[in-house]
Image 1 (cartoon, rainbow, N blue to C red):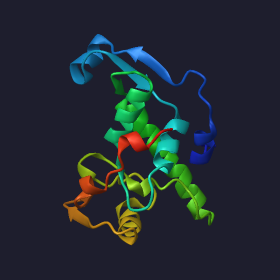
Image 2 (cartoon, one colour):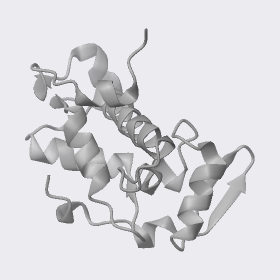
Image 3 (cartoon, rainbow, N blue to C red):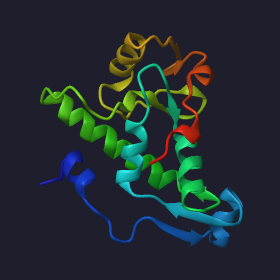
Length: 160
């Protein structure tokens, strides 16, 4: 039987966080330097730090994690997967009636795009964001928070 998102989030990966040299094959895409593989718990903790009315992008999260670990970049794939696990766990808790969960709907993709893979899909997240005072616009099959840059939390205020 597949693990729930909550079970995945509770897993401690002893080899993480890990800072590694960016391999030559990856350097073409991400440049030279080092790359950090963060922990799921760090990603979840960052998402929890975003207060009502504020927003965070995955790129801001990656910037914070890279700086925290003294790396050039944070792995976009690992960071994105761990954000999805944190969101999924929060969705499971919401389904059981829990009120205080990781506010995953406040974590956006680049350019203010709502992540369609998060619980509730685009419409569910739009409702939550609009309830917190944000304006959301559909552009084709995607949805974006309008003027999201003005509502971004400052990375230096995250401290996890």
